[in-house]
Length: 161
Image (cartoon, rainbow, N blue to C red; front, side, top):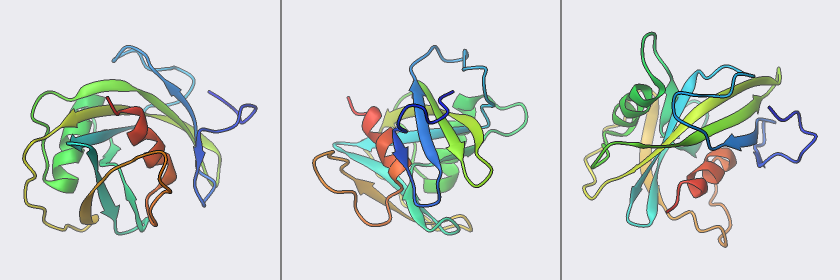
C-alpha cells in the first residue's frame, strides 16, 4: 500500500487518506493490509446515493464493516439496505479495492467498492446511524458540496460508467 510517497488520491480534514485504488479480481484482495469493510455507489440516473452519518457528521457512500462469515459483497448489499432502505435493480458490480490510511494512528486498511443502479427510489427511514439520504451528481467540474466526504466523493466518481 502507498505510504504517502505518492500524493494521496483524497484526504479529509481529519487526516484520513485514500492512498490507492486497485482494480483487481473480486475475491483476490491486496494482502498488505486488512479488508474489513465494503462500500456501495448506488446510481439513480446521473446521481449517486449518499447517506448522512449522525456520528461522523458528513455525507458518505453507504457501507461498513463486514460481519463474521460475511463476504464483502454480502456486506455491501446488507449495509446499503440497512443504511438507506435502497436496493440495486440487479447484482452489485465489483469495482476494486480502496486503500486507506486512517488517522490518528495511520492504520492501513482496504474497503471493497461495489456499484449498482436503481430505477426506483424507496422510502427512507432515519435510524440510529443514518439521519438522511440524498442523491448527488458528482460532476468533477463542480466544487464539492458542503459536508460531502472527499474520500467517498472520489470513490463515487470512480464508479461512473
